[in-house]
Image (cartoon, rainbow, N blue to C red; front, side, top):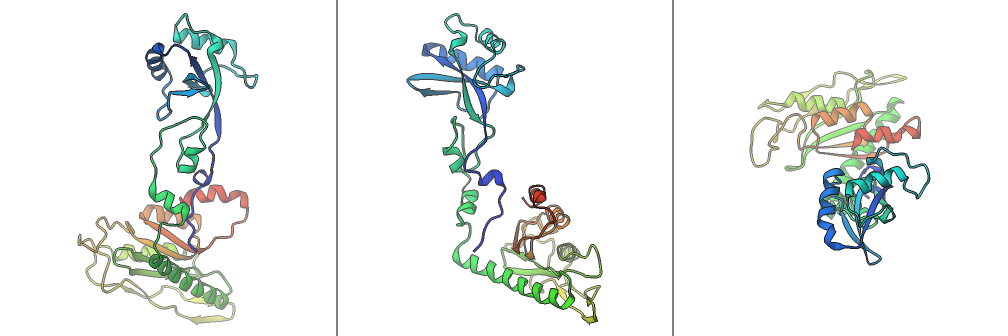
Length: 308
């Protein structure tokens, strides 16, 4: 099963509400002028200004957060705020009794579910790609099998190497999704603090930039265990049939700065350092088999920022 790693703000079915002030308008002839005043004084882009509720027109004036008044009593509009808003409206037929508190979303919805649960209507443009990720329909059956096979092989290598070395060894590969060519592979260098597999594979892709000939690099360090030297790992190579080079062809990624347009597969979720490296390398998509264990679960929200 392939699950998209999405922020909590997307997975929430309802958006956090916040208070706003609306105006009951009985005389519809006043609406156009009142809308012009409200939108000029209190811009609320993407929020629907007028709705029909209980056979009455409600005009959204502003969010409470847009006013410089303290709302000490829940559910009650302070007199100073009422007088201020009535003075802006500047119409004798409207009084403070026409002002009501309503709830509006604190931000705009990102999904169909959030939009349908909004307490006040807002403009919404469906994101089909995001909806497919949530429903698990962003890949067809053939693509899913290929992704699972790649990640499963990396997990197997990771487990075997970690047992041999007695320390964690991650395995990664960079793939061109257009040609399905594996451009570079790497694993953790256990003798270097910065020898993370992700950092090393990005370095391999970097060394392949603007080169016409395929690259074959010996690993600069050996896998070591507590009992001594086990042996050198397999050579990391850039595919001979599709070297990373700055040539605009049908099967190449047009902007090939480092990992632009490429996909990376990892046995285990990248750390914060590697996540930032992937951001700067312009990687397109990240697939991994296991979540990374972190010291404190409370750090997870901050850590996740680097992965989205």
